[in-house]
Image 1 (cartoon, helix red, strand yellow):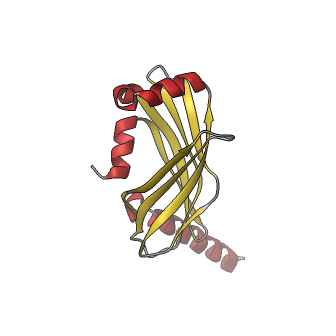
Image 2 (tube, rainbow, N blue to C red; image 1 turned 120 degrees about the vertical axis):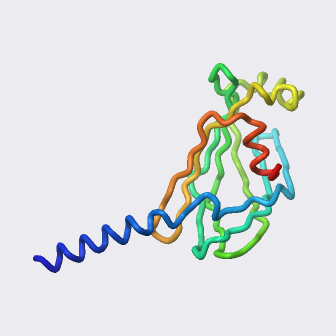
Length: 157
């Protein structure tokens, strides 16, 4: 019985120690190499990012979704990544990300898209992505991040 408790405590300690092994700085975005928007049929966006995984773990990104809102908090649209994305350890690669778009108010979305630079200060992004390294998962969240600040993260400015 003592041996089983010791093994359980060792497993819990190992899980706690390993839970800090995934950091957001392990994934470095060097820029966007391609961007395509399709509003025909089911709206979608395809983004190709130049991404580097600096960690010693193969990473897998799951359940990535983002919501764009205006400053009043009303939802304009949502983007969800369709499939899990894999990043090999210690590598730099072009990562193709297909996303499904849904619009709560398509007319508002079109009017904003017509003048995205002028409307950007009044837009905010909220979302999350789950990153897995082996059996360890960690969820990264963004809450009401200004749209231009969110985009600067991808463009590295």
